[in-house]
Image (cartoon, rainbow, N blue to C red):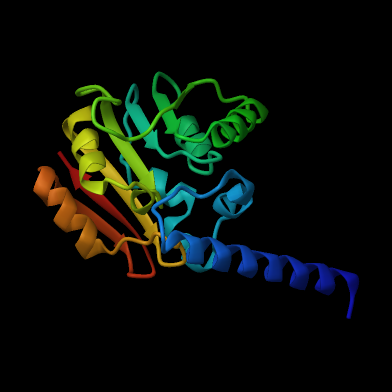
Length: 210
């Protein structure tokens, strides 16, 4: 067995152990992905290419000058390409409750020479996001990590401008996976309407309109 194969198998084993541990712990509590597992969040899953960062951004139908909220940005997997797509004139507000995740996202932005991102450490809770400030908002494998999902969606609805879009992406590999039916039930209760659906039960993006 070559060294490359051995390293590959070791990385795969580490990924499986980390995922299994995170999933087991997550059954007991709705907690965000710990920062020490951020490398897993940053990976573009080859089995779920339809929810890769480029596809998530493309489906937002961005226009010049838009302001976009990346809610639960993590280490910035989608934040950076999103910000690049808004140049010139647009801005991303990237929020997360973990300072370490924000630090990593800032480092990625500096390395990519991206300057149109404002980083904020806060939770998606009532009163935190303001009213009618954003044209788009994204939740990428985040909703299930929020203890009060209904309250979070109410706050996101309030934060969006009329006609704004909330884009929710889920992957079944995530321990906090939320089904399309669950999200639609919660979203419709606060006033959202389904605009578009991309993908399958395994990995999908659901765009909701205010």
